[in-house]
Image (tube, rainbow, N blue to C red; front, side, top):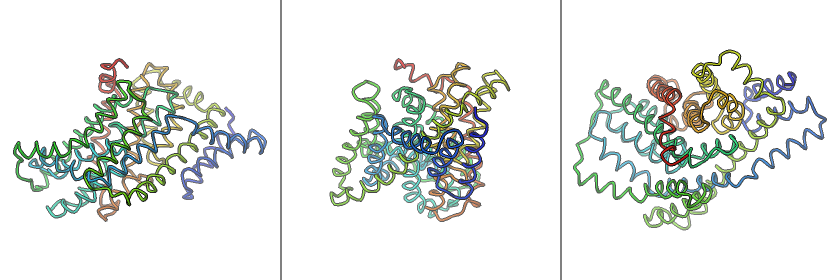
Length: 431
């Protein structure tokens, strides 16, 4: 490991972030400066350009823009309203019913749309005014919406799990998708427990209990939307199509469904496609810059040095996992989830393998860990969407966020130290 190159990479990256430089440019400029210490300027520039260009030369990455487009079509196709109505018939009569509805709907919407920000925006816009009308504190509603919206990044189909598969060198996407179900549902249940007791303590109102007819009616109305999950995940697991092919099928299904529901007009398609293109461009720029930095780190032998450092502190599996979790929690505060996965997966994966941890388990652990970072300042994108929708401030939303953070961390610890939670379902399908 070249000490000077590592020093330049670290200091320049932190400096650019501190100056408010966009994360993608901070990554690629600091990578260039680090490599420039070791190589001539022409070779450095050529190498950086080649690494950025070849980073996107992946069939699996095509799934990301397709799933983003499918999510946009779903968001505009009246899906959120149907999911909320279905969730309301299930838990609306319980204490904190609207908060529980938010969590269940966000889990379903996040899984279908594959975007935490889309889920936070949709749920906040629809349920925020209703919660305020029923007497809920808007900060409490925002906190529930912010944390629950991230669960869709664990419950498949998830763009972040596809990115982890790429960064890890080919961990099965189907296995990762299957592995995400139980941890995602477990995290959602923990959030629901916190929301339940908080609402009971505050004495928030409840809705009337739904009868069987209402439950069945709302389920039938939401069923076409829920079938997307079965088609996409079922097709991948059964080997009928790849994740990329599944993403294209999801786009076609979402478009047809939106037209049938009469929620998407043909003349609206151009704006939907443009919006998804902008989102895809941001994500893929982060991908290409992050892969470039990951290569520079490998060139400087940073993964090997960090592995040696951590394993020299302790060879105990539980201690090593705890240290990695603490590092990722810290990283998540300052870095968005996509570059964090791409940069730190190659660093931690050799350590994980050396202590006998399955890469599938580590992938879910890593994504859930970094999901917490999406809800924390100063970078948390979902946090800012959540408070923006209900027009409140970070300072006011921190208090109701804290118990929900504890619930997410408790779920993270269970997933970290009990691998069966993550691996049981993939094992049942032969992964």
